[in-house]
Length: 254
Image (cartoon, rainbow, N blue to C red; front, side):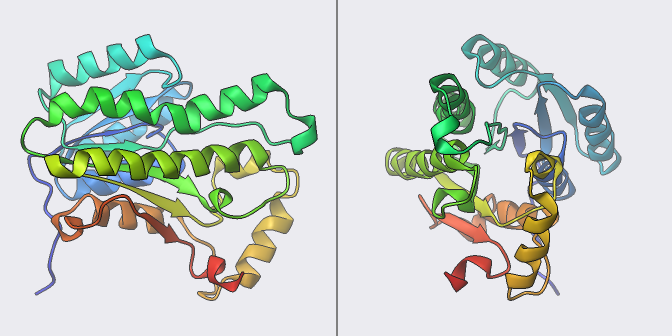
């Protein structure tokens, strides 16, 4: 008999949970029994559709509009979670944005915007989540990308922000591991989501990535969600401060 991951009774928050990788993670957590709060900032209809899918699986869903770049939005989001869920067991920091330009064309505004959403937001999210996890412990997973460790054209700001995110994950893991809270990251290879539509060389990137991936296909949001689910399970209880790369072997080729 196959071993199942059981998240019955767990409460989760997925930022940027209405589309793409965030949506896949939210649904996977719900399928394993967790109640899920879905955070979005612009696209309410996909968030509500995700909530409907979660409730159809038998779990409870919350839809919360908040910009994780804004401290008062984070305050209100966690007030809602505390009111509706009472506790929090799982935090998935997935909301992301960024400016895709060559480094020499970036302004300080571009840089700060990308850093604030992709890296800096994790800190207040964790600071708010920690009290709701109490003495039970919890799981925190940040979604990164290969741009954290590889140079990619036009990806300077985003890649740098993801590198900062992974560093923050390690430092948070150091502080929270004694409290039975696992902090890790999952790093996705090239995934064909809405975010990729902003790349000027999207089709070339997809074709080349698939050709160079030993597994013979691109990574999907569900692939990343499976890895995130593992990190949220008791099977990962001794994994702290790590970045799990999900890319079909793409990054091992150098």
